[in-house]
Length: 383
Image 1 (cartoon, helix red, strand yellow):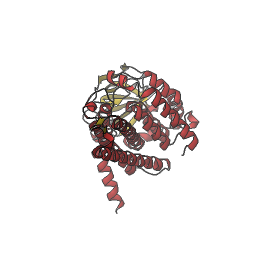
Image 2 (cartoon, one colour):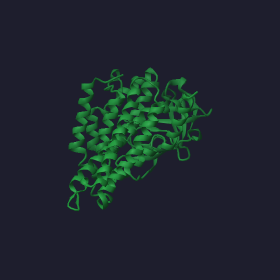
Image 3 (cartoon, one colour):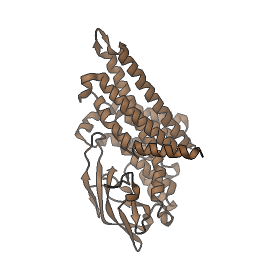
Image 4 (cartoon, rainbow, N blue to C red):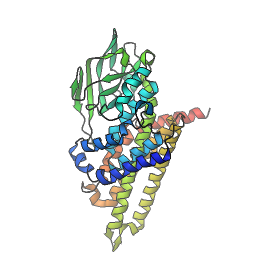
């Protein structure tokens, strides 16, 4: 699937103009107060971003992964948290579109296009992050329903979500994905947002711990129907390939913002009678930063291109996520150093970029996990 290039450029251009005019100057206030940016969310809905990857037959834009990555990059250039508002929703869309029954597709996907019916993704637990086999959340069959008990961590958009893609083990220890429908809010019929997690960065949207106590889900809400029982982890890992492209694109956007601010500051700040950009030490640093941003963008777009062509991209998505996230951290740190003491203050945005970048290193599978995946794939290819 490939989006028409003119349409792609039009959509990305509209998002870019909005980021420049409305997001960059306003994000700091929302970020510092850790306040959900409702007005920005409303504009994202108007753009149709929540239906960006929903197939057209279900009312969405049906954009390809490359266009989606470009949009995420622009959002993150303005404020990385905006990309997080979209990401878990897009993972849910991908899972339903790819593995849902025809009934589930027709029931959920059209409602997921305008942002009024948002989704969250729930895999990690307090004692089971990357070690998914240690999952403790249980779903026990009771007639035509499943009774779910357990605690989930790091649920982005958990409070505002109307749908949660919940991974739980059945009574036969098969990891299965359940489509948990709920009303937005702190609690709903056996579901409680038991703790709001305060974070170093990635602020302005909620990340919560969610507790399930005898919450019931109809058998019709097992992703993929009866054939989906025991395949939840495989479904999730497949969708996380697009999630890792999202993370890589976020990293590119943040790195670009850090580079832009560093260049502007280096042109304006003078020492020893000339702008610091004219000092070789700073000029070389800017050159290195720009090269890292460019390389991160290329590896991210290549992973997205392969995704669009239908190729398996666990290796490419892992490389893109690994390289782009590490590059973003390095570029943001260099931007702070170029700003000197000013970079350590909240008066300049570079300190926010530095606080946001660790999320990309840790999220959607830590970079240590990515290295394991990459190494395993490389060794397989040598046989």
